[in-house]
Structure formats: structure tokens, C-alpha cells
Length: 327
Length: 278
Ligand SMILES: Nc1ncnc2c1ncn2[C@@H]1O[C@H](COP(=O)(O)OP(=O)(O)OP(=O)(O)O)[C@@H](O)[C@H]1O
Ligand SMILES: Nc1ncnc2c1ncn2[C@@H]1O[C@H](COP(=O)(O)OP(=O)(O)OP(=O)(O)O)[C@@H](O)[C@H]1O
Ligand SMILES: [Mg+2]
Ligand SMILES: [Mg+2]
Image (cartoon, rainbow over all chains, first blue to last red; front, side, top):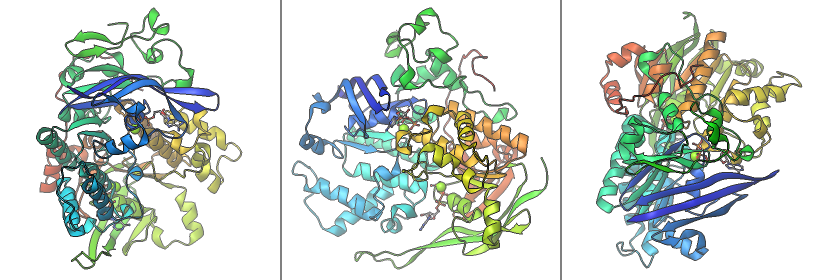
């Protein structure tokens, strides 16, 4: 059963010369207890998709259309009150921007503690009865331990600026887990973590998925990492998902030319003397997009129709979809 | 590679103390040894990697090298001059040659400044490209793969990876001699990351630039760096040529670090010749 379903989501920014379409019809589905990985070019709209799901659009951005169904209810039609009950509780988010969830004026202990207290005061919560501050702090410490924070006791009293990049990231993960969410949206949650800590966090998230049936939308540009946590991934290019399917299949038999080229760019320590390959050309500006396929200007396999018509998602295997005219 | 030393670090030390201010804490004052008596050399024209567990002191060390924070003890020499005790005027001149790409692409850009102002700021401070600053900015943005049309936008209008690239453009603006790259490509997709790494390497070959390349991505470090320095809890535990370190890490901590590199299990039947090797 799907817990989250995003249908034809369109989001634009109001620019000086008219609107700039950024999300141009995003479709995705996260089933209960499933991890969906999302990868794609820097600037293609991954974070914006994540923010849209919580209805937290930045200034000057607005919804142009689409539906976001969570437990079969459209989030876009909910009022502020209903959303309050969902944000941070049923759906929690690890933001890419550390400042978006860590307040510089409060210690880590206080902020995560507050997230826990909110949960405790919630009449619908199935948590323990209201407990003392001390108990909350020991719960914070437990969470910090879960995310492998070094010396959690010390960190309780530290302010965000006193943490290293990776420690701040772990504090945010702990905060997101405090509400015991059924859907976790993790936007580049391990980008500043060393591999050892990163893989411990991945192991933790997998465990939470299994024991609490937590679903995760995992955004990362690191394909190797995605392949460790998600069985299914979506590849995004300029505001659309262009390929989606089982991780093994996408990494071993990529169908979309963009996905193929992306996989060729991975660095290989054995070939230090060669320059790295990168995808030729640059991403077109969203405001200047024509009618055709958004990748056409850089695509080695483009044909006549690519300039005229945007390709629809086509089935190429069981659960494997690709938006390309030339397959 | 030239043998000449460009940076020499002696007994550098930085401790932090954390003071709990809450009643329910039982601990007293705590000391964090962020950088603990570190000495090493960087040779002109080399790319020196710095790796280690999160929180081991890499960023602190980078900031100490540029005197963005004061050390408790120790000396840093640039071309034989003790950088930390230079008079203000000389220090400023020296700063032109020394740049840092900060780890957090969100905090390091002034939200009230337009991109053109951010990238050209070092040019104006050092009186470079006089009256041609905008052209230089355009050129730099192109190098990092951002449209020139975005130069009058504000930082909040950019994605995480785009902000990281603005940081890179700013750091390269003055044609510095030595650049500290603190997780400089960590939020970029592999294609853009490849483009930036190729750019950095090209600059290094052409102008004999030197980099201290801080990263937790060991496959990028393995590809990009000439030597690698491994840090653990504020101390440097191993420095070695990249090939040697990757084939045969001697320190036990390095071995653990290397055992968990995520890899794609792949047998890609990809036809070659599609990726551009520029
Ligand atoms: N306030 C804004 N005004 C105009 N454009 C914006 C604004 N905020 C973001 N954008 C643009 O929207 C696009 C999508 O941004 P988003 O943050 O979703 O990218 P992303 O896929 O998360 O990229 P990254 O991997 O670099 O984090 C980017 O091209 C960005 O420049
Ligand atoms: N201003 C500060 N006040 C107190 N402690 C600090 C401060 N800055 C850093 N620290 C501490 O110093 C240690 C080293 O931090 P640093 O940022 O150098 O780590 P790092 O190796 O860059 O880690 P990461 O890979 O996570 O970025 C950490 O334990 C951190 O909490
Ligand atoms: Mg993003
Ligand atoms: Mg750091």
C-alpha cells in the first residue's frame, strides 16, 4: 500500500520576467516500509520536491498543480491545523540546510528535548506519560547515541556552531527521529559524514524501517550510497523523474541516456592519469525550456521528435519506467 | 612535482572548552582537543588529501592554517614566513594567495549580497580585474557550470550544490596559490563534481597551484590527491603517497576507514565514448 503518492506535481518560482517552472510534473510513490531513493543533477529540484511534500515552499514559489497524497489525503488541500499534526510527527524531515532545523540560540539538548516534549504533549501520542525534564534529557541522549554521536553527554550542552559538519548532521537526524515518524524525508542526510559513520547511519535507518515500518524518501547524489539503502530509485533531471525502477537494474542496465552518462562519471582511483568524464554541455535554464525533451540539448542519442515533444514515461521492464523517445 | 615546501605547520594546537549551563548536568568543564599538536608540510604544486572521521578536527585545522581562528599554540609558515605573526598589511597581501572553500555552503554566503558581489568581493578587496570584475565573475560562473544570467540573484535562490559552486567561484577569483577545499564537491552530483575536479586539476597543472583537499569521499580522494594525510581525534596518524596508502594502509584506523567505502556492484555494459573527457 502506498503511504505517499505525489502526482504530477508542478511548482514554479515567480521570476522577474514571468514564472520559472522548476518542478514540471513529478510523480512518485513511497510504499509503507519502503525506501525510495532519489538522485539527479544538482539543481534539478530534489529539495524542492521534498519541501513541497511538507508544504514548506520558499518565498515566491507556488504550486501550479498536482496532488500530494499522504495516507490517501491530499496535503495540498489541508489547512494549517491539520498540517501541524502531520509535520514533525507523521512526516519528519532532515533538511539539506543545517540551519533550517537547528536553531543557533539553543543547545542541542534543548532543541531535541523540545521535539520530544511536543510529542509527549500530543493527546494522540502513544508515548509514555509526561515525564520530567531529566527523563527527556536521557531520551535525547539515547537518540544521540543511536545516531552514533561521539560523546553524546557533552553534545547535549553544545550549540550548533560548536559542532563539526558531520555532528550537526547527526543532531538533525536525531531530531527528525524524535517524533517517531511514519515517513522520513532525508535530504542528503549523510553528505558531510565520513564513510564509517555514514554506513552506520544507513544501518540505523534500515533497522528503523524494519522495526517500525518507517518509510523513507532518501535524497542523495551518491549512487553507491543509494544502492545500499533503497531497492528502488528515481533519477531526476530538470524537474522531472526521467527513469525509475529497481536499483540493481538502474545501475546495471540504465536506459535513459542521462542515467547512462551519469554512471560513467564516477571517479576511478585506478585511472588517476585520466581526466574524469563529465556530461557534455550544461543544464538549460528552466525559463528557456522549449517543448521537447529537457535533456535533448545534451543527449548523444537524440532523434527528430526529441526537440518537439516531451517523452512520457514508458515501461521497459517490470516496475522499470523510462522517459525517452529513443529506446 | 616540485619539492619546494609551500606550507609548513609546526606543533599546531587548538582546544575548545564546553561549559554546561544546565542544572541537570553532572559534568564539569569539558575540553575538546580539536587539533592536538599537529606538524606537517605541503609541497608546492601538490594535492594533499586530508581524511578522517567526522569531528576529528579537519575543518578546525583548515581554518587555523588561514588564521580564521587563533591557535592556542604552534606556527604556520608560508614560503618560510611565519604567517601567524605577520603584520596586518602583509597578512592581507598574503591572503590573496590563500583561499578556502567552506564546508557549509549555506552559512558561508552572505544572504544580503548578490552573487556577483559575493564572487567579486575578493577582487575588490585586492584591487584585481579593476572595472572588469563583472566579466571575471561571468567567466568564473561559467567554469563552475552556473548560468551567467544568475549573477544578480541572491543566495537563497540557489540549491545546495549551486551554492557550493558559488563558493568555489569566489575562492578561485583571485587566482590564489594555495586553496583549502573543505568538502568542496560533497554536495555535487558526479557529473558536476567531475567537471570541478577537472577544473581544479587543470589550474594546478597550469599554475602549479597547491590544494589541501579535505574530503570524506575516499574514492574522490584516491583519484584526485597525490598524498593523503589521515587524522584521528585531533592528531595526524598517517601521511603517505596515495597509491601506497590505498594499497597498503599501515595504521589500523586507516584500515577501518577504508574498509567501509560504499561501492556500486556493477558490471556495466556501457558503451564508451559517450562521456566527454575534457
Ligand atoms: N527562490 C528561488 N528563486 C528562483 N529559483 C530558485 C529559488 N530557489 C531554488 N531555485 C531553483 O530551483 C531549482 C531546484 O532547486 P533544488 O534546491 O530543489 O535543487 P536540488 O535538486 O535539491 O539540488 P542540489 O542537489 O544542488 O541540492 C534550482 O535550479 C534553483 O536554482
Ligand atoms: N567553536 C567551537 N566551539 C567548541 N567546539 C568546537 C568548535 N568548533 C569545533 N569544535 C569541536 O571540535 C571538534 C572538531 O571539529 P571540526 O569541525 O574540525 O571537525 P571535522 O573533522 O571538520 O568534522 P566533519 O567531517 O564532521 O566536518 C568537534 O568535536 C567539534 O565539536
Ligand atoms: Mg538539494
Ligand atoms: Mg568539517
